[in-house]
Length: 250
Image 1 (cartoon, rainbow, N blue to C red):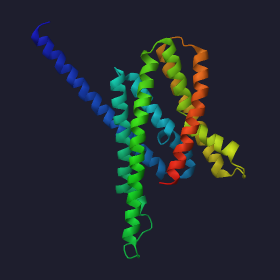
Image 2 (image 1 turned 120 degrees about the horizontal axis):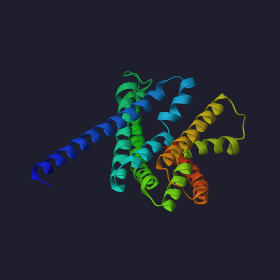
Image 3 (image 1 turned 90 degrees about the horizontal axis):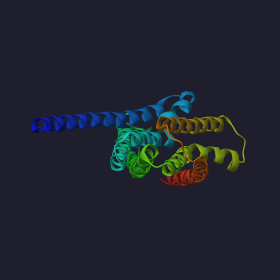
Image 4 (image 1 turned 90 degrees about the vertical axis):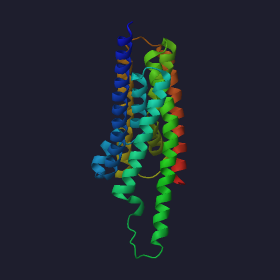
């Protein structure tokens, strides 16, 4: 290949990488901003919007899709982690600057107002740190799963698809399990709203994973898929139980 052609190819690759980086950065900022907006809308709207843009299922699916379209397992993990981390930083930056929920109801002339504000800031910092760590784990895990769904062998694709199908709606399945099995009181409007959001999360995960499998256009081992998905539902539900326990003490 002539040297001029090599240079042209290198320039084209760098330009494509820059465009991809910009697209992923915009995706991260948009996801974080959408999650923030979902917190600010009325509850009647939030029960539909939140599971689509501000839930574990939604963010995990973003990482899964990024992994699916990536070139390699390494790029799948790196880009998925970057997008989720940027989304997390954007979300908490908007809380700090725009809504200032951490300082809600505190007036400058009140006794210990500064201490209360610092306590609120510390709470935001702890939450952001927790979700940044979660972004790293989820980004790597879901990025690899997405890549395995697209490029893996039949067996690997079946396992990866089953894990994604069962694990991604974990926040929703945990909410359903908590209300239907653990909750002993009356099911009021609050619980019905949580159930509706949970059903939306489960549906979203099933639809997206099914679409990715359809795009792959390759047969899978259905018994491996079903067994893996069933085990992953239990694992995902248990994980979100642990997450909920940690969030209660933060």
